[in-house]
Image (cartoon, rainbow over all chains, first blue to last red; front, side):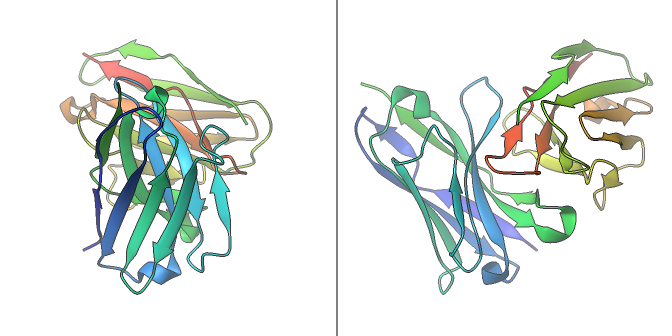
Length: 120
Length: 105
């Protein structure tokens, strides 16, 4: 059974940093590109970042470029999101998701999400 | 690529046929997915490649379209279908989602 478990969320002041983790199990993690998606309270879904399985291709939304860094440790089956210079508008539930190549890159498995609150 | 979903809110009854539209600001071929999200839960993939039903998804869900206009249809709305639905384009980065359609009783 595929399982994605996010952790690392919490309360942080503007300008602060936080590192999220997404622990994966039930599939060959290194074979899959992964993505982060966030959802501000009461709002829609916003794609944040994506990273290939081999770590050689990475993409970011303009709103986080230069502040967030996605990485992965395939030996630990874990995806990370380092978030620096956090802003109030980064407050959201952050989900990790698998990118399924056979489904034209759709996000077919999702974690339960971890809440990040940025406030003074 | 911007995605515009309509309507943003839909009131319907059990047994109704429901159609949600997603329009892309430029052609995306069939690189479109649909997700269902219930309150407090992660999104769930329903349809990919515009019209391919994800494994395990009931056949009352269907998708159609290509290029810039797409539709998600629920042929007979069931109580468990009351949720918010999002389209997503996968044609190019940055990936984008539509604004969502909330389906309520």
